[in-house]
Length: 153
Image: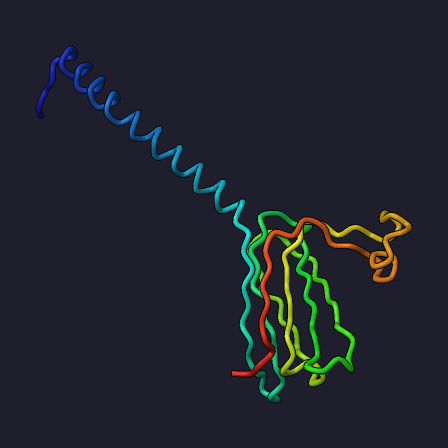
């Protein structure tokens, strides 16, 4: 067995620690930054598919950094005869896929979708805020927005 004098062993340990500690600190800092970025990720995307019955399905793909965010979707029919259909979905933190089966009245129309930070109930809206009073809520703090046509693959 190799014996190393204590003085030399102490020098080796100091050199190793002197080189390793800054590298470990840098790795820890990089890891912490990546974790913070992952928690702050906000993303909104979509796909349009047909289900087994042939109906269109809009799948909203979201990444929310915190619970309490909302996905708002408005469907517009291809003709002005149908009123726009507004849908809202509460989101949990993390990645989610929200499938929305498209009624045939809205197929070939368009849609808008947005990721919002909060939903304000009508009782908390200004009484003169007619859209909020009519819908029963108002979405606040838009973070991401997409628009598309409801055409099948």
